[in-house]
Image (cartoon, rainbow over all chains, first blue to last red; front, side, top):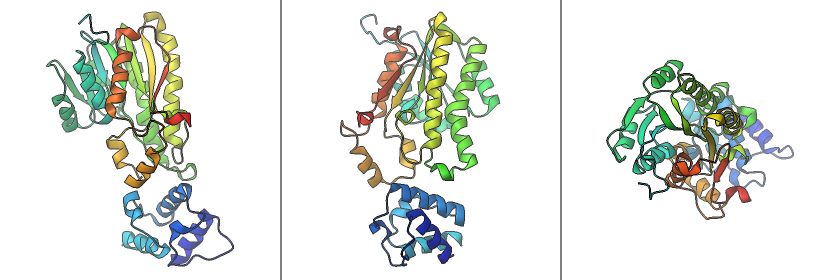
Length: 75
Length: 248
């Protein structure tokens, strides 16, 4: 699931030349913007059947924390 | 009353979506100006809150979900003759075009565009609209100003504008006027529940040349003007009320 998420997230960010680390603070990526935000929320809904509200998402800081939030919501 | 140019005294006005936000403010403002109101929405409790803030005694609540055909029929059959109609019910959800879900799309288009068209049709067919009446459709600057994730909502609000201009043309011979109001962002229940956070709103608010989002009252008094006899030569127009947002 982690691998799928990271692949999909990379697609949204249009990153192909490097890997994402779980400890990355995703808001610090140069590619991060509101379009990426809306795409990410929609991708999580579509791929993992999890809806993360804007308010909840605000609390997440790293790539790993997004993955954790998806796992928690799935169980 | 004759020295009050924007008096609505003696007028009967239907407001949809009156259980919150702009619709509620319009009902309250119209009552303040002397109109008799019929207010409708899905939430009876919230309609009662609106009613409790309205001047005058003669108002009526009709609970109805306008996306249900039977509810439109029931609503219209219990209405008196109308001098004004404010179509205000609306919903939104941010979705990028690539991820639009069929059910969300249907819900938004049905509530924002299809239901107002159906309700108007029924009002006209059952001859509930007086000659000289004023009709208002609550569009949005979204119809003319694009923003991320708003594809379906923008389409619905642009659709309302196109529809109402045809309606304006068809009803002009009876001196019935049809106009649109296009508000910018206004603090309402809808915005509070949308997917953005408070921070996002504060950033967005800075894009408004007049420095802030609007209030529901600022939209309601424009509706009062368009409903009043002083607007009797105005039809088919789009009144933008947006603190200057569409200037940049």
